[in-house]
Length: 311
Image (cartoon, rainbow, N blue to C red):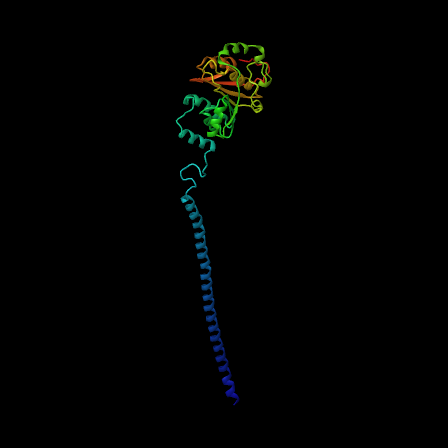
């Protein structure tokens, strides 16, 4: 009996070792398969985010392109104005002038070439202070050309002022009086050669009989950039004439604190306007003449003491 046990024992051990080997082999194979499956799954999951990321990037890249295309195709607010994106209304004064002159047969007294002389100056200086002797059919035009500035009209005929104000109430005008007559022109030009008429001062305090002293105070207190003398009436001997208006315009220009004043005189084809503009606005200050209009540039005499009345 003892022998028999001894023989079977090695056999049992071999069988146990063989089973253990196959069991370990099975575990190894199983583990290898699981690892391979896991890595494959992990690899797949790593590739998906890459794809999603690419898709997201494409969408984000496309959005700015779409916005740019929409911006290019978007129409501007003012399609009729290719060089601007905003619409600006014309000024009320210009609108009124367009309607007024489009609906009336009455045209300004000056010719186109004469108006162009003053227009060139207004293009440089406006908005500015513009004083006009006379209220007429061209008054609305001057106000419109000086848009944003102050344009004042001095008129001798009160009934004419009332008539114009009914049609054009926005114009700033004042009634003024003249105590001279055209037939006094020769006498007045001799008076103007006296020393008291060569002195530069505020017209209200001048000792020269040619100086106009009864205008509203604001007229004297304002520094005028442009002065137009197209009044008072001067085409017959009993009319007031423009002798004192021309002299006073020159005096206000010389009494200006600094700078130059552009002074225009219309109807210089007439004797009074011709002689008085040359004598008191000075031929040396004459810049140009177009038709019946003369343009003088009169400097301030307060900035340089001892400056002669005429250069």
